[in-house]
Image (cartoon, rainbow, N blue to C red; front, side):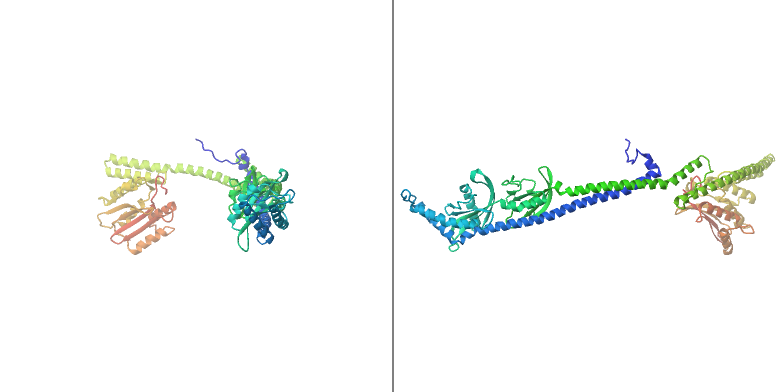
Length: 627
């Protein structure tokens, strides 16, 4: 399966191939990335700043609103304790309790004559008048308090008849009020918003504070009070907040029921399973959510007095309207700046690359063979320096071409001379072959063999070819050379021992590397009167180097002679007397080919013999070069 790779600008190859395209891409990223990132971060920071400022502002307004609502409810609770200290109300409720308690004992009293009130009716009117006067007073203590209801222990209500907000469901709510008041044990209990029916079947919403009325002297429960307040008082507090935030306000009690709703659509509903209330888990905070399919920012605050939570939902569209306008303006300005910057970049790119394009055209002409071009150097900048170097290069190329032409001419002359000089070695080979045939015809086998061996040596040493040979060829040549030495000195006085072929298998070395060393041992190490000499060549590894030890059992050298030989190896010129030329030449050839760390070292002792160590790279194969 063919692998797909990312190939940027594959549809516009000139962008990636030409210098203008590459510079344009660089400028494109250098302009778009910083400006785009800066614009995005600025818009994001501005949006976050607006949101944080809104949260802070709304939280402060929410604190103020919660404080006002708490103060209002605290005032209602204070109103609820007034009957416990107002003698008129206490005496009236006690009389009501006694009256209805007596009615329960004697339910049928005497009725008065027509047009004349009975004693019971007179007493009831007296109680209502006494309690009613006090209720008028309490109703007018706090603005916004709709109605105050007083109940005796038997649940008979007393209220101001002239009030226009009398509720007609007292018999329905009385059991719950009484239960809550008794659970409060004399402390005020706040009842969440209820929908009540008024006159002409009109509906309204109120919240209530209920409390048992306890005689401050006898600590006896003599009745109960209920203080209704219209949510209109909350409207007065909330409307300024909604106008400032362009949002909606919800107030829910501890049970999750809606106490107040800006749109009056959720009052009384339980929001425990809604999207809002489960996320408002702390005393105050904010979060993002969806409400009726719209993204909103919800900010909430819990009242420490009532336990009610005030949730303010602000549509994010309204919240970020200014941020969006600022972002759009920023984007338009950024695009305008980027377009202008890219235009300037294009002008600069083409202005900067114009000399380079001219230089490229000249290079293409040079590729076709036209060397008679010159780059006009106008400025001494980098392009001017490149142009000057180009001009110098062309001049140098022309000079080199002329030099190469002259060298080729000389090379042809040298080849002609070489062909001429090859006549002499062929003449020597043919002459040696004639001598060998004459010796054979005269039955002189020894002269014939020596002539044949000498011919092989001449072919090995003089024949043109590679400078390196397989190590086996060098051993074969050494054996021929030692055989000639034995013919010369007679009686097989020289014995040559070579390394195990497996140790040097596949290795190549320089031609004529060991012959000068063996020759030096034969001519300088053989003692007069000695029966013979044994020359041993051994091989070993020393780290990454291959060492060949050429050892003889000759007369050896004293300290002075050994020092002179070693100095001759280090010397750059041969000795005037011609001694040591062979070893020094081998030493120099090795250093020139493999480096200064390779070459020959000589050790010797009088009467023991001499050892010449050849150090070469260990990894040397077919071409004679280190791998």
